[in-house]
Amino acid sequence: MKNNKSIETNAIRNHLERSQFQEHSTPLYLSSSFVFQDAGSMADAFEENTTNTNIYSRFSNPNTSEFVQKIAAMEGAEDGYAFATGMAAIFSTFAALLQSGDHVLSARNVFGSTHTLFTKYLPKWQINTDYFDIDKPDTIADLIQPTTKIIYAETPTNPGVDVLDLEHLGKIARAHQVLLIIDNCFATPYIQQPLRYGADLVVHSATKLIDGQGRVLGGVVVGKKTLIADIYAFSRNSGPALSPFNAWILSKSLETLAVRVEKHCDNALKLAQYLEEHPKIARVKYPFLPTHPQYAVARKQMTLGGTIVAVELKGGLASGRRFLDAIKMCSLTANLGDAKTIVTHPASTTHSKLDKQELSASGISPGLVRISVGLEHITDIIQDIDQALYS
Ligand SMILES: *Cc1c(COP(=O)(O)O)cnc(C)c1O
Image 1 (cartoon, rainbow, N blue to C red):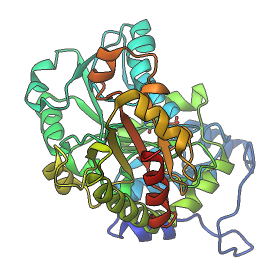
Image 2 (cartoon, rainbow, N blue to C red):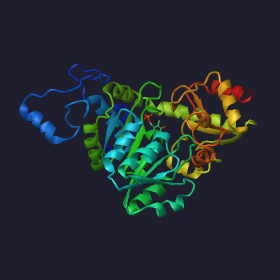
Image 3 (cartoon, rainbow, N blue to C red):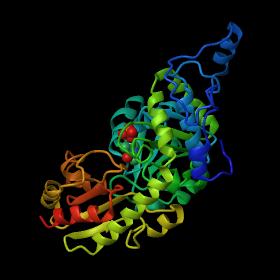
Image 4 (cartoon, rainbow, N blue to C red):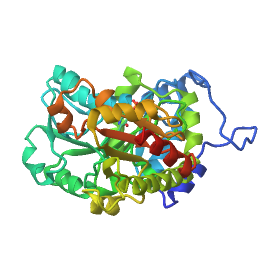
């Protein structure tokens, strides 16, 4: 699926063959199974064990294949497989590639449910995880054990928008012959392609910017063909497949990913610059602000700064709560990467069960507010946030 077309063109022109009706837009193939002419061709399809021939929509479906092909082409990947959610993609990847006794080395700052997989579920199968600190990249190689199979990271991270150096991680993974898996959800393939820096697999929650309008859930893994074959075999039998309807929505969404992401990032940078000067704000973190601790790395590997702005309110937990209560237009909801601007306060919501030490270890301070900057006019976004800060 690698080709020399641009990301935008791949997201638009990489579609299924037209049916006899010569439709311009890919139809929705709501079919649980697919028919064969005779016993021989059916036997061949089962023998093949790939998604090349559709048999049953738990294995593959034309709409999910189109979606996968687009993402794979945009990421520069050989192959891929699509899932019902981002977490299904992440869990199925671990389940397919890890054996009992294997070790995972992960960045400490990972998505909450990924952290729960590492700490609560993978240990049931004697798979243990150690965390490295993202601000100590020189210590990563020393934490690799003879049983380490995977180095895992997200960049930028959720919710703190820390940036990890993909080139550095790629070099370590190659030197120690371990797999590098990157959650590229916050950047999207439009902004950053981790496979170019030596990642073996890229995972996405398509629920976020790829859908971009808060409608459906989805996930996808792309990368080396041999690894995808193992992930496909596991998934074909365990059933986390993406629904054709959601695949159809997501594939359509990709046609506008580039223009949406451009606008998201333009609004996010403007908001970040405005808030940096704001008297009620202690600190602003945005990958494309020169004050971001990994600004140079962000400029090296990302073409834009992303849609998430992390701010530290003066006054900690109480200010965070007051801010959320005073917000009028922006939404208080758990999603991100939506056309609608979303504000969240992790310390009183998603991460409220963590104590002070655990919070700070995950890079979350009591006054941290995460803003997923939407596509409304920037003047209206700033006005709402401003009035809430002064409430
Ligand atoms: C949302 C998210 C996930 C999980 O995706 P779902 O589609 O909600 O299962 C994984 N990683 C990151 C970085 C996310 O933001």
